[in-house]
Image 1 (cartoon, helix red, strand yellow):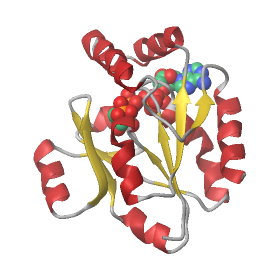
Image 2 (cartoon, protein in one colour; image 1 turned 30 degrees about the horizontal axis):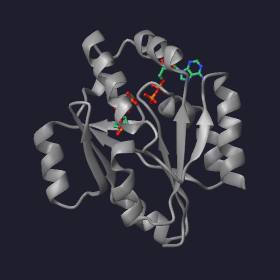
Image 3 (cartoon, protein in one colour; image 1 turned 60 degrees about the horizontal axis):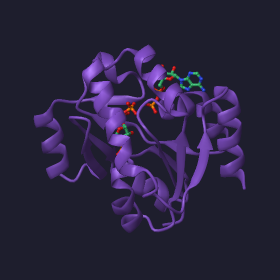
Length: 179
Ligand SMILES: Nc1ncnc2c1ncn2[C@@H]1O[C@H](COP(=O)(O)OP(=O)(O)O)[C@@H](O)[C@H]1O
Ligand SMILES: O=P(O)(O)OC[C@H]1O[C@H](OP(=O)(O)OP(=O)(O)O)[C@H](O)[C@@H]1O
């Protein structure tokens, strides 16, 4: 494949969606596609940047080969449309909002992927999740607990701290991509 897969990961609440949204125009100017995820979340909670489907519909799409990558986490199922393979084959770079838990499998399929780990200081992370107010307090605790499994277990990736200003993080991401 000729295009490059940029695989953005990080704890829930670290700001992956926010960084992607804020970088959308600059990425488009560089000809970089952003994959629109398919998620078994309600349409209201999923926002513009993803497509909401039922669990049954997700399973059907997965069986039919609609996804290049798919995983389950946080009581949800996530799929990256197979269309990204056409983009990559055509030489286009593609950025996806990925999963730390799926990184190894993603690397098997896309050995040259550029993994970028977004992080924020723990106390900031909790505050951001609470302020976002999308999950229940129990779900937020479960998401924070999930992070422990990944401590020190991820390698060969670029670290990008998003504890500070969002636009500074976008600039750092673009510098990384432009290198
Ligand atoms: N740099 C930042 N400064 C302040 N708030 C931020 C920053 N980045 C993200 N946020 C906020 O933190 C919350 C979580 O961000 P979000 O993009 O939903 O994270 P993720 O997609 O990684 O779960 C959102 O309410 C968002 O507005
Ligand atoms: O293996 P992990 O790295 O923990 O990731 C699991 C899933 O959680 C995040 O999605 P989602 O957008 O639902 O969560 P978030 O917006 O709360 O980060 C991430 O993008 C993955 O799809």
